[in-house]
Image (cartoon, rainbow, N blue to C red):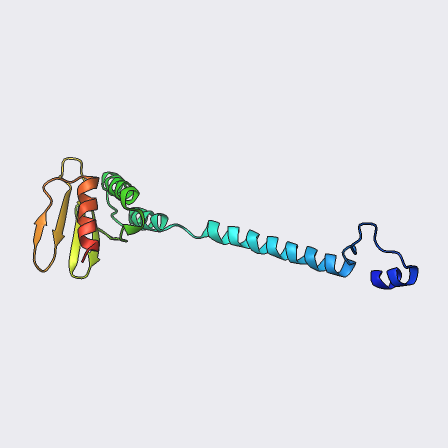
Length: 161
């Protein structure tokens, strides 16, 4: 029997002047809240499982350490330093690179866009000099000084293509 039927039979209304929530409606609201909480919980699990773009980039770099005849720790640490420092300055404007191990235990990091290319060579040994090479159909050269700032400027040049 519904609350309205009881009120009609007794002639009495709920003390607040309004009808209390019907049990069926309350159960539906409670079910909806529980479902919403489950969806939110699932979203948190999915977002925790989705690596950030930076994590993906660093994961690709770290994967080079597991190949036969991997790059040296020095090369991997140098590459990671330049990636982290430059990413921190550029954030979403930081283009995703490609990583390749060279023959001397170093890493070559390449960014490409519309005919332009920027290549960072992280040498395998501490006594070897790292360098930043850039090219386009019109120009090619090596940056005179390699810093996170010079890499950022070259990546901005690349993005402008």
